[in-house]
Length: 91
Image (cartoon, rainbow, N blue to C red; front, side, top):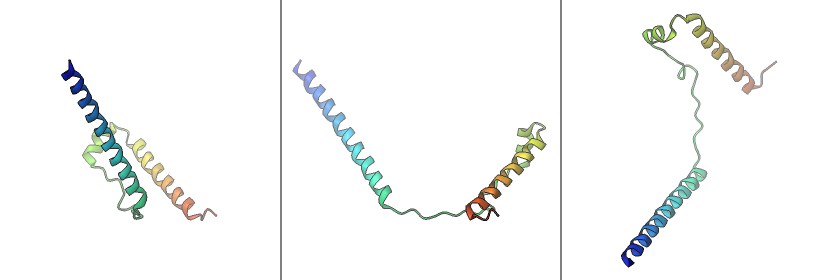
């Protein structure tokens, strides 16, 4: 009976130590995140463009070429509006 309680206490201590280590690691990660400066990434639209394989597009589109082209055109127009809005040259 005593061995059961001793093993139970060891389990509780092990659990407590594991939780304490995890909290310390999460706290350290949060501190490092707040201290470090992240570089500003600027990716041009040419480098971030969406390029689809023609065969893949034919299989997935199932005859909806106009809808897909309209979606691409809509996405292009929305991105250009966002760029103008960020530059504040709306006039």
